[in-house]
Image (cartoon, rainbow over all chains, first blue to last red; front, side, top):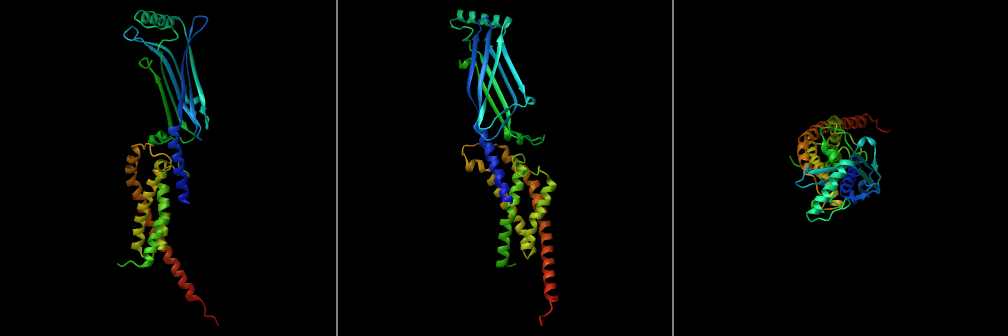
Length: 175
Length: 151
């Protein structure tokens, strides 16, 4: 009997360890579209692939986008940010996955700064438009597998075993 | 002390039989969230189960010293089995799966507490098992002596 319990537990342990390797971000897309009314739309899309038998309960999703302004003032032009916490009860279904997309309209002063960035960069040999600026994106996904999350405060490693943490970053150096 | 064949058989049987609860309890103590059934790292339950686990050692072995040696042996085998269960993802699926360093640290950290409970509970269980064995033996003798000769 105890041998059967041990085997069941060990198999679950194995599947959880394997799920850590299998759940991944697929096909991240960085989008910048100039709207007919002159505003700029900054977007990010990604698919969380979950080929495992476990449902992933989302603890948090965060995304932000900015432009590295080099030595200019300000040094960074923040564009968009989005944070989703766990109390919304979002999940990524098992044996499939889920698509996540974020978007933000850039208008007013920020758009003026971006136009200034384009003009300055182009005067120094670049060939940028509002749609081709190397926008930086940073995305982080944290979720837990099924109901394996543990409430012990002392034993945090238990939640480490079942926590899925996926990070995507795209910086100006990669452009 | 000379080991008899019955002692060796009892020792081996006890070691094999009682090592699986120890393996499960050790694994469960490390990963209560993915274990089934989960006893939630409850030390009192582990002690009680250790006592129950030790009882066959007293029942199956005639000599008390062999029973106590078997407690040590099944604890060692149980730890080895638990270690094997921890290696299961690596052995069964993918040798490149990384094992967190904490895994070893936790094994070391938990060893003292668990070993104490297993050995202490096991010896108490073995003593209780010997009591049961003696009671059964006395009862058998009584029944045999009380039996009226068939006419």
